[in-house]
Length: 222
Image (cartoon, rainbow, N blue to C red; front, side, top):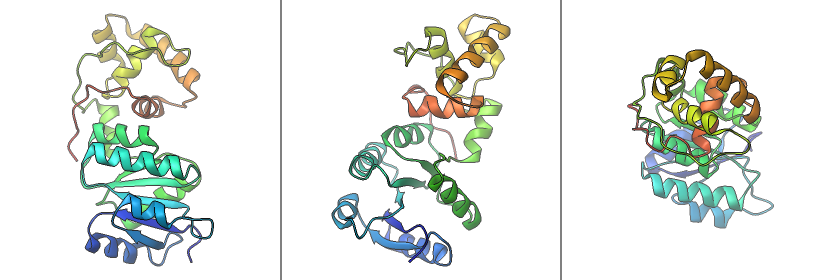
């Protein structure tokens, strides 16, 4: 048995077998495999509980969100990692909001996957570096932010800025979209980062997606 037993759910039988071989000599060896979430839920008990569930999404966002929500509600202490064949901001947001702790491309290297699983077990949230690069460069499609209900004690302007962050907008672009100065954006950015407990703008953007912001963002290419 591995140090961190893993259950693998979804994907084709060939894919699951390949991933089992992929992780066989690591601390994350696959202990059980299932075609569907329901089978996984039925198999888990006090003597047979994984530390991590790797869910291979079919690309159906609603089905993935429902499956992850079921896992998260049934086993709140189990860490959930999603593997996807393509990168989609919409899918990423839905999965994280439903309770996933990681969202990675299935083309990831063995070393990167093991490192990501280690981070997830330690309580971190992981996602493709390409998405972070897109946020920094502003490479994701962006539309003018929509009205968002206030979150916690955030101001309306801080909510607007979080909406912009999910698209990778720079401070200059945010200032232009909201009709304010870059200096004002920086002030609001510093305040909202402190309020949500993030350490930088990328973490703030991830928090925003997980909290339901960015619903007008178009999917990014893998």
